[in-house]
Length: 230
Image (spheres, helix red, strand yellow):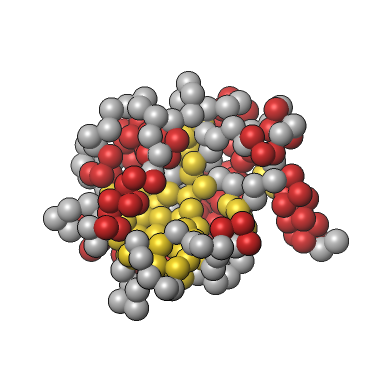
């Protein structure tokens, strides 16, 4: 699943007429870079939620066939935030109502992470008696120096600890976690992270390669120059 429903307030006025995931860097929309990497990693079905100027996202991306994937759209009248977006998209994420472990990424993140490397974890997560999550962590950027969670030597995440890192908006989740949330409920993922980490059911890994959370027009311009080699 690619999260693409946000308004992109910090990107205004660019996002007044263009949804943030369609803003271009290196000649391609941010979300297309994500789609291409997911396709290269062997993912065949991609669910994209959208709200603000969502029709533009659908008309630009189509059914996904040009990348060899099937794109399914989850339309939100108003952005439901991450957990709310997942809950609404459950019928698209699950097959015949069966629980599933799925990968979720942000449409405005640019990275070189190998999504295929996460596949080995899904089977064990699906067999767990309680829903768990696995988060890809990154070194703390200048705008988030305190990080989000501590990554323990055994790979589990904890709320307290010295080796703190920032969540890179790349994670594996179990759909069972969101079944009690009514569709069209606006809810962030933050309490789910906190609860799952506190219960010892969250694991993580540190990714130190290229990763950028493109949040401002200046960051967008800088990334565009870098990709174009200017």
